[in-house]
Image (cartoon, rainbow, N blue to C red):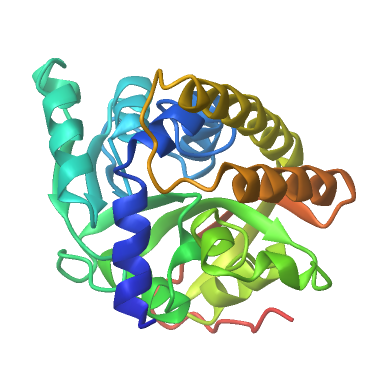
Length: 271
């Protein structure tokens, strides 16, 4: 499977009814509260031009625009999700109305140094070419601009059972230790990296997914809903493994933020 196939597969999955049933409105741990925290860390203000990479249905973009009054553009590969996001934005006051566009994190549709801040929630670890994405973030940010990523983190010894495509899409197989994300950023021209752990948010989300999977399986069995092709047994097994891994410190969740270097600044490699 090529990198393009993986990205399109991820995009299609996040359009699905299954994801809506399991994740609700927010497709990442911590919900609106953690989105607000991320916005505060990257220092959003009413004058900030911010891009929400992998914006999905626009939930985080709405939170950021409402909480900080900033100018938000949401980018995602799924035209279907962005259509839902645009429909939701139409009901908001014009001054706080995010814009949305189809776009790839590895080829952002913005000019060099034209953006003040970037946020990317629970998506960076799914990008096949993380180096290209990090370079794109650096390219479009102005010097001194801020990047804020929230994502799943993993220990080096996480079981190989998490390495298949299903767990990649579930933001596990492509996850890294916090220092791994920091290294992608520093090697792409960022400095002043801050790491903030939020493992509890991941545990709460995985536990909630487990409950919703049980309910969905029950409703499917009663023919109250139609979920063709869903392997509930495999999904529940992966969820149980994820809960054990979080509790054992092998899976976690973190915010990683950094600043684009000013011209002439020497970037130190993160070990």
